[in-house]
Length: 311
Image (cartoon, rainbow, N blue to C red; front, side, top):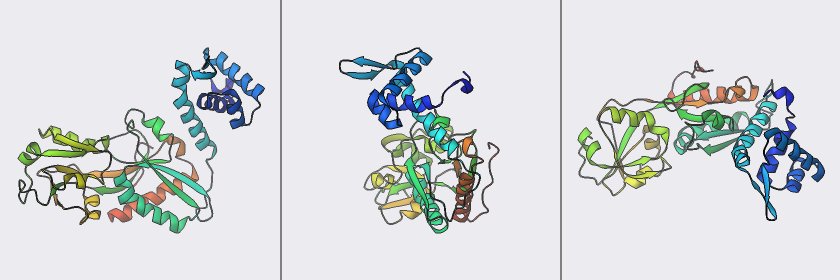
């Protein structure tokens, strides 16, 4: 299907119809009269060869295809908005703009706070919106990236998209201060014997793969959708947790835990900002990632990261 043969205004009508499930409300949403929206629905039905909305009793319900198109249409509209909001120049000091970044609570705490300070100092009219990374990031990476300006995530989870290096970190273990089953040093036997509390998403996948290669299968007792709560789920228990050193340092003294080095040569953690290729040549986005690279370099005490070969 060639885009040249499509009326892209129908994309907006389709999204409104699928989300509102009411012709009149959908028309009001996009500025069309009820007859004009009815005509748009008729064109969409002919195009897809499907009713999309079927009347059940006194209301409309989505057909199977309509349900499948619901999320796809929203993603397409978001991407189109980002395409047509691109600009050739960006004057950071005087612009009004908002960037959306997907990130874990760890990335927001360790890096996002520093980035927000830099943005406030250099571009007071620019807003940052941090949103939690969705669980399906590895299955639908392109779709997820199309809904945001960037994704803060370390290497080893996704690939094939442009990225800029931010900062490095390393994994450490947490054990309760009163856990007398662990001596001054953590052992491989401890890792196999003690129960674990873990972050339940894919963020620590490289570290988990390394443990598997070493023959350690963590006995997971508790999982949580936040790195911040892991220390508190360790306190007063026999559990151990794998967290990032920078976060452990920031939370020092907040929870009664000991920070311990792994009993093996751990895979380093290299944080990066990833984005959809549609943003690559946008002036505002170029400013964002240059600022992010500089903040990350200051955090690591190194020179700013270079764009990866994926760009």
